[in-house]
Length: 133
Image (cartoon, rainbow, N blue to C red; front, side):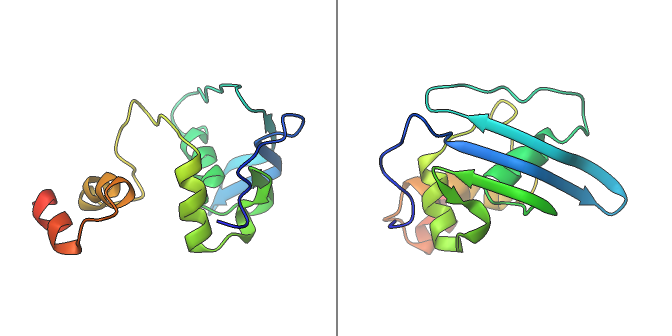
């Protein structure tokens, strides 16, 4: 991908979040969140149920869009990337999500297909369907 840089400037954060807010109806999950994460740093997002941990991860990976604020990953604005660029970005970042639990934004079938589509790019739709069934 042309937009996603292959080299990382150690003086700049690989993940930069500024004034991010996210609500679902009247439920304000995140308000004014700021975060810098630099190369070779690790971050644990820990908290009680319903405090916005999963929402934050989904915002960083572009699965959700914030109501306010900016999110930059590897020097690029996640909010400005198209679907293809988001897929390429997701190949460059990794998350261990709730001990590798299923993504709640996907159906069970989509969760089963996910590694086959992402990691086995030479499989046909028929082969993926057969593997999932």
